[in-house]
Image (cartoon, rainbow, N blue to C red; front, side, top):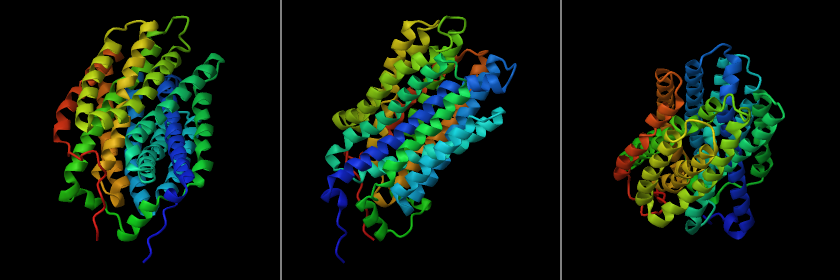
Length: 421
């Protein structure tokens, strides 16, 4: 049989089109994540009249947990469907899912509605990541992979910056949380026309021809078991540090800025500053992994992130310029993991099970993180609404990351080849 011609080699334009589609899909995913981080406290204060700060903190953590669990289910399901039916086809459905339910959440009239729509929208948000990573690594040469991993890491944080910028403008003009969140529906749909014209990767088609069926059971075979377990733990460190600690910043700033002249826009201002660090950090993570190697770069990131997050919450008790400055520095390191993971996780699995494997590992991390985020909410209640102490306690997860990396498989920085059948 004559091998199928690789359109991505013959026409490099399609390589750039695939990259644009992945970056737009994941970038607008970041818009949805960012706007929820900014507006959930305001939404809950509206939907739970008379709720105290400890109650708001608990329901905030519950809404984050629902998002994480929805993203976990979506990441595993869309990853598996992407291996079975195609990266591009399932990416279209993932983007449509997160856009639709983000829009519907703006119509919530009870906190349970908001939590439900967050869960359902997160199915698509979680599914976008493994599909975007697989699409890019299977259409570009190996030599470009570290840079592209960094680009993917930055894309969602460009989305965070977009969310912070338009939120600040809308809040300054008196818009409610409903209009700010609802705008995410419109923005989310913008990537669909680009994705529509992307051909399926030739590598996926060739692998699909050899492996007719993808099974989750294969992930737990002896050859992949260690990769799944360690990949899940590494993802948990990155995700729990972000969601259990760093992303409480908007809620914390909202509280300490109350009664000041900038009370209405303080969280959006800080979010803009932290997003600048996050954009650079996401790109830096992939570059560091390619330059220093996977393990040494991870050790550097864990140490630097713990110090910067502790400084952010430990040195700020009132709203001033230090909050934005330290948020930008912490954002640089917190987000570097999301450039590092797209570089390392695809190396653990061959083509025929790559989206399933990396999606499962990353999203089991989300399941564990959801439990951790609930723990952060309980801590916030125990500390009588002191988000600062809760965030600093949760930041210790980065120190555990220093241990986990020593159990990680050594990939030599190379993609795992498909076994012949």
